[in-house]
Length: 50
Image (cartoon, rainbow, N blue to C red):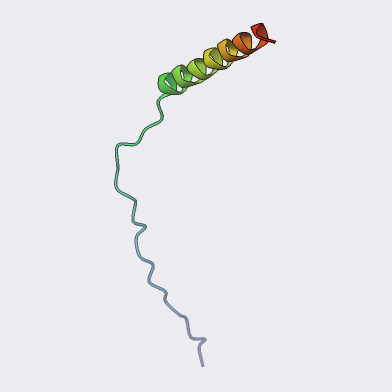
């Protein structure tokens, strides 16, 4: 008696739709620079009044 083989049907992988979200390095750099400048000015201002 030959061994039985099971056939498994695999479904093709579905990809998610493109939503337009992309990584923008310039935006990240600008935001980081803004936070750095704001923090520096805040610390200098609070140091002056002590």
